Structures are given as structure tokens and as C-alpha cells.
Length: 127
Length: 161
Image 1 (cartoon, rainbow over the protein chains, first blue to last red):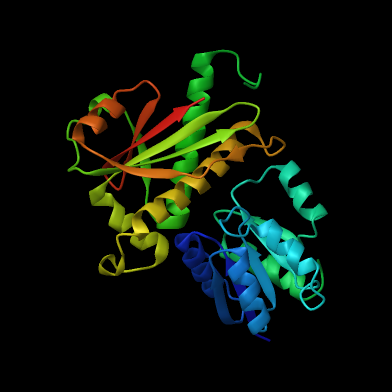
Image 2 (cartoon, each protein chain N blue to C red):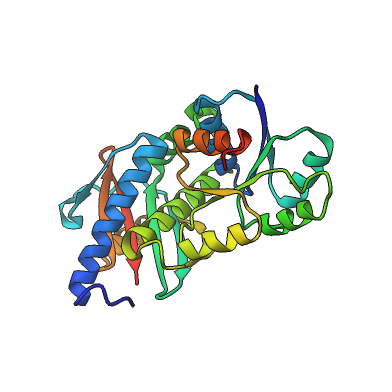
């Protein structure tokens, strides 16, 4: 089984580093799609089969949380797992994210073994 | 300011140590580069200008600012390693973006190292500007600035709490 993953971040550096991390993680990755904000991500989600979204929170045009809210209101996208990639690892922030339906989070810098375990746990139904 | 430290001097030492460890670990993990602490006065040679000065402000139980000043000579190796690109594949627009991302990660990790994960901070969007040799010399001698040697090249980090 190979996965299509959507990476959403306004930083080109962050997108490229995460794509690199995914490729060396040992996960079976079919394709890594990339979007620079939540609005572009929603367009990609309408046009492509995506297994999981990895997103930043603070982005211009449309934030990660606004994107998640729009996904939740869309019948086809509401069950798609979203993982937040963040530099803010405070417990309070993580609690807020989970209350908004975020499946999990990864703290930057993201390590290959962490992204592999998180995605496998979610897509194999253990999280 | 939190009450986990007893004096401004202890606070400064603790914070600088946390910052030094954080920056070293992020550079090692993300750019495969090694950093070591140096006394500013021991750095005789000034690296060739220009320099890129990246700053980020944070706000929470206390507010403050982190800054990093990289000599241009180190930037392409740093960014090439971060992105997995050859030096001639790096575009000029990649430089500020990569520094902002690096600083964002360093700041997030530093705040957890210094204050713990139970404390919530808000991080501002980092900014990057180019500075010249006189700014470098001034910045280097400021009391809130520490010098790290990264792959033998001096890098300044500024921590204001």
C-alpha cells in the first residue's frame, strides 16, 4: 500500500524538508502534493485522492485551522486525517488542536521515524 | 518571568545554555552542521560581509526576542544541507525563507527547553534583513549576544528576555 500525502505550509523550505523527510522515512509514498496555504490545499483535495494531510497552522490566505473547519463541513473530506506540523509544542496548544478534530501533531524538526510511526498508526487505524 | 531561576545572571546563563544546545541540535538534525560556543572576544577574524540577520519575537508568560546572524559564506552550505540541494541549485529567494524556518524551529524548541511544554507561547512571523560589517561588530559585542562557531564560522545569536 502506498500513500498520497498533502503537505501544506507557506514556507517552501518547510515543504521541501518535510517532503524529503517523508521520502527517507521508509513509508511507501506514492506522491507528495504540496500547497502554500489552506485554500490551495482544498483545491488539491478536490482534484486528487489524498490519504493524509500534514499542515502548518499559521499561513496567509487561509490558515490550517480554517482549512480543517472547511474540511469538516465537507462530506467527502470530513474523515480525512489531518496532522499538524508545529514549532509550538505546548500542551495547551495540543489540547486545543485535538478539540478541533486534529488527529495528531508532530513537532519540528520532524524526524523520519516519528512521521513514519504517526502516519502508519493513523492509516492503519491504531490512532 | 518565571520563578524557576533565582537571579538575572543565573537566568541568562541558563537561557544561553538552552539556546546553545537547541541551536546545536537543530543545526545538526536539519543541516548536518556542528556548532560550538566561543567567547566573542576570542573571535579575531570578522567573516566576509554581508550577513543575514533573522529575528523572531515571542510572547507568553514572558516576552522576548531571538536573533541569529549568519555570514553569507555559511548560508549556501546551510541551506543546501537543509533542502538537500546542491549549492548551485539554491535560488536567492530560498535564503530568507530557509532562515525564517530555521529560526521558527529553534525558537519553538528553545521555549520548550527553557520553560517546559506546559507553558504556551505565541511566536511572531520571523523577519530577515541584510546587515553590514559595522552592524556585525556592534551586534557581536552586545551583552545579550553570544557567538557560536558553526563549521568553524562565527554565527551570532541574540537572546532578549
